[in-house]
Image (cartoon, rainbow, N blue to C red; front, side, top):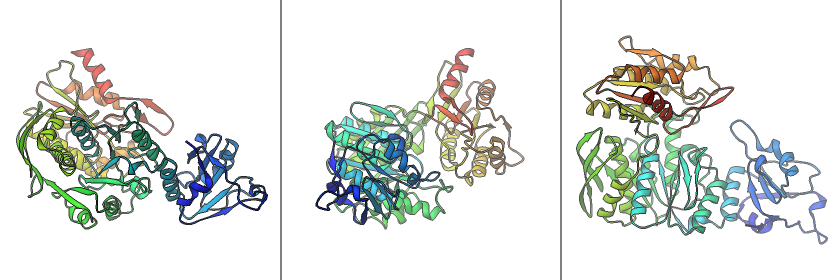
Length: 496
């Protein structure tokens, strides 16, 4: 894929070109270089790249312009004049991230105008909702791509996801790949970071889904209101021809709905809504519920556990209904959905107790999972969990409080401590634990899991929470291969 700079820069509403004499042609016109790629990381620059310098959280891309030029960049975009004596075009813009989004969408041919993109946002449930909708659309005969926390899936490849929502250049590239493969839909998780940083700025969403809102990422957002407004911006940007699916049981629903100018499809368990459900039975084998839609009601039996997953099913069903799919197709798609990696994933090696690995890493998610498990188990609930370092510290005591209220015994351990001291994180979790709690502190996660499995009796549930599908553990000075599922499986196979 190639494009002339003169054509590409037309999408920049406000920019000025700063070039040296070497950049002008014989008639005084600016040299029009050919762009073969766009890069925002100097390490990914190759010959023919346009390098966009972005101010990141920890590093400023403007400082890496010399490296980008040395690697073959033929033009530079940034928020200030970058290098005197430079013999390649430099475009100065007010906001590099916004420029990157616009340039990337143009370079890849505005792919979101050629494929229906459905964005799912909310604190919890995004990953499961996108997987359920993916299954429904596939069942309906459509070609579907997936962008989310676990992986990015096109027709021909699946890539591990470094972040939930990729940077705008990468997102546009994946969407273009899906278009080239003839896919009909792209289902994408949309994080608050992505919304705040403009990564989805040039994506034309056909639909947007709101799952719920709970305190999270307050290390990044200044307040819960700022976090809400980041989520709301997805709906503020919907065109009248698109539609929004909103969980009206959530307290933030009214704020979200005020931003919507498009058609709205509501879903709920507690209130009257377009899409609702009545739950029949819940067990460790799965959940049965009656799905109620304007086009009819159906009974759904599936292997997903708990009320919170019924909300995820409603979110997916509301999206499918909004797209015009019939209720029988929605039912079949839900029932055919494969288990989502690291979301209440069972580790079964023949033991007489249940072991579950889940990504729950907020107090809201942990409470939802533990409350559900309390309803369906006659035995004890044993929990292993920690909190991530360099992330929202305010949730730590709240998670300790949830563990105290809803478990019989728990082990405080490391999650991904990153640059923080593990024992400092654990101490902040302990601030929410009262004196009646039964728990132990074991910073080494492998030992904590082993202690929980060794303590389990017939009929108990062991929940290993916080990391889910993740396959590594991040410390200040090292990264270890670590998968809760494999660690538990290995230990269980040694005993059962």
